[in-house]
Structures are given as structure tokens and as C-alpha cells.
Length: 137
Image (cartoon, rainbow, N blue to C red; front, top):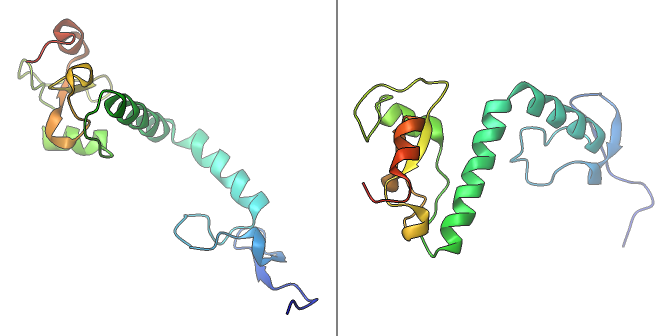
């Protein structure tokens, strides 16, 4: 049945031999070869070093939840892919946006049943987005 000897694996970060249950099973995570304490430490460091990626992920999650609450379709939308696709041009006025200060605009607002999908989002100036409000462009 159960062996008395635990199965051990080496942590890629600290090099210590640990019980296999301290490692992620599927290996899909960047830190899957790290033991649990090392994984926590490295994830915290990565979050501190990549605030833009963390914020973009949080905003995407928030938009998907809102779209679902209004009955719209959702998919994970990468802001930076949208910026590249639209070549940094505001879809409302056509002007170039500041890469450090722009909004991911829903063409059909989530509150009007719009979806959080690549087809329904575009780059916009913050002023253009705010002045548009919940109108359909």
C-alpha cells in the first residue's frame, strides 16, 4: 500500500530534497519545479517586479466578471495585444495614445450587454473613453 519512505524531489531554487507533495503536479506553472516555500517567495518577488502585468491581469478579470454579470460573452483579453493590433491609435478619435496612459475601451459597453472580447475592445485616450460614457460609439 503506502511505503514508509516518502518520495523526494530536488527543488530547483534551493536545491534541497523535499517531499513530492510540495511540488505542483502538472508542471504548467513557471515555478513548478520549486518547493512550496521557494515558490511563494519567487512569486512575491515576480509580482513586485512586474506591476503592469499584475494590474493588467486584475483589470481583465474585473472586466470579465462585469460582462458575465450583464450576460455578455467573455474571453481573456491581453491589453498589450490590443494596443499592438490597433497600432496605438484611439478608435474614437484616431489620434495616437500615450503607451503609458490609455484605456481599454468597450465599443458596446458592458452595461449595455457588450462582451469582453477582442472584437468589442479598442484602444482609446482616457478623455475619449470618459466622455463617451455608456453610449454606443
